[in-house]
Length: 245
Image (spheres, one colour):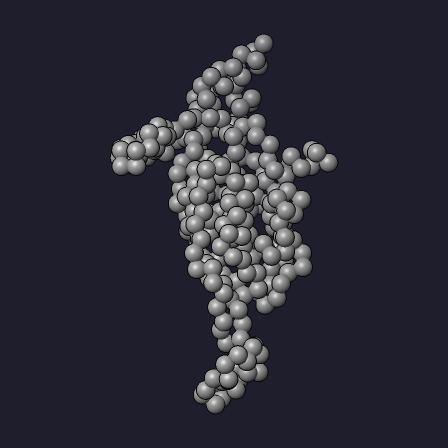
């Protein structure tokens, strides 16, 4: 009875903070925290010589990865500069002849050329974050901006996007072929996102099996295990797949 009573108190209070719980309830909810969805804007440049995507493919792959680690479904991904450029290949014998004689080889000679992609990726997303007093104060200050956007755009929902506190817990999520159908071509994308976007969102890499090669295509799909904040009771993608098996 005491355990059930403590659990009810924790749920009713939204699991505000470990310090605010009674000592008898601490053991029940020690891994849970109160969280809110906070707006983030992140940006990175996807660079590759071998794994080339068009804008639609790159946009979709980025969105799927971020939803899997906790982003809300209304994520917006914008991708630009998806054109593939040709550049001189320093590893080719033609490059030596370029340097030695001070002039280019005839146009269209592919032996001394390499393809490359440098795409600008901008993401707007709502992502779970612990509802500390500082975070709630920051979100409250943003209310006037949301109200202004609502008036300018005529969208009443923009002003009503107030924070909703919910219980959350850090879980491990597996990103792999089995969980979200990652292919070998996603290796560099996952590697670059984990070193930039994941850090900004406090998504921690706990294990990685990446066989990325900047000179040639990988033949093995990547696997990455991360620790991230998810709503309590929400099954992480990796665990969900294992349970079905």
